[in-house]
Image (cartoon, rainbow, N blue to C red):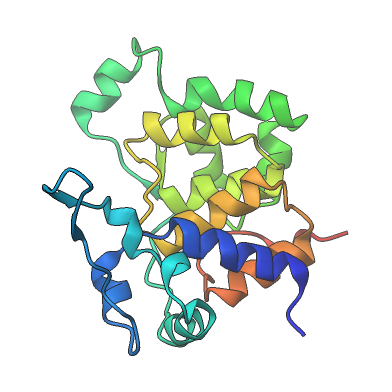
Length: 210
């Protein structure tokens, strides 16, 4: 029997995932009528959210097919190099990852050193990320958020200062947001949710478990 927390994730995913090209390609998916005649007799258009899986009669069956087709393509390095211009102006910029990180970690009761020990990122690179000489990639920010039990508003801030945003058409983003919003940080449950959607590339140090 499927665990209740996985079932809740599935419901959240079906209600929020919005890659309609990918959804409509699932065998058995029924394209909804986007155009309809309103009560005033005029032709109106439904919001594109009507195409989400939660509105399909055979939602559970379609989601199972969707999961079968998944493969994690989100691999990136843990960091990226800032340009010369970014390095120059970063000294005076108030909104950088390195300057927002301490406050975000303070909300979690974590230090940068403690957080880094929970990530599968080489210490020399993590130290440079903390100091601002390297930028973290999106996978690294998500992994950091999960291992430190970060608040969603802090995650959004750290993503933004690195030039990223949450995307409803990204499987990884939907699953990670669910885990953070629902405070589902238990390691076994977290890893089960990631595995359910074949997300294996987040740089989380599993060996750090107590």
